[in-house]
Length: 271
Image 1 (spheres, rainbow, N blue to C red):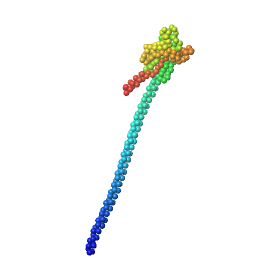
Image 2: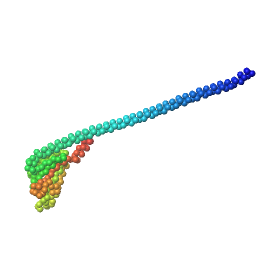
Image 3: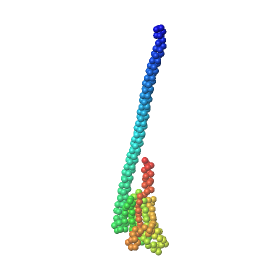
Image 4: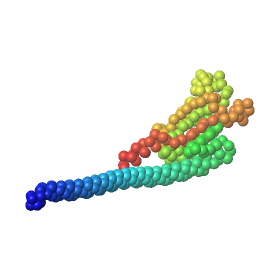
């Protein structure tokens, strides 16, 4: 009986042992799963951190590249501005030199005119003036013409030969010769030839230009003639002195723009 009772406990013992073993196995399996999950979570976090670091590194790289590009652009801009400033400095220096040379030539011409015309300047028959790169020679009509006549007198020929000797050496100026009268109309005797002061002033200017060309060796292409009659007085016609001042020939030396343009084109072609 006792042996039978002992054998009756065996199944229960086995069951308990099986249950305990299964529980241990389950416990160990659960513990391993938790550890695996923890490790997986840590690995995920590590991967996220690595991804974030890579993203930050990429952003930093892009920012560095942008800064480098900006610096290169600024360097290129500064280099270009430096070159432009250098070019402008050279151009300014060249312009200053050209202006100084032109002023020196202008002064030389003015001084030459003063020397050649000093007698007429002293007596007030000729007036010289210089301003803004121009030279103006005012000759009262009695120096060049007889009263009411457009033909150049002997004294006028002498004066114009001296004047032409100076003008022939000036190669960078255009020469405008203009005739002017007072407001008195031509005498009845002259009206058949010169109906108005326009014709008289133009005829005198043209005769001066022709004389400078033929006897003063001044190139015709650099001269032009104009007549203004009584329309541009420099004094009132109320007095004999004022009327005498208005009867004049003006010789104006002005910059020859066509020659300068041709010189610029030539300079460009030789570069």
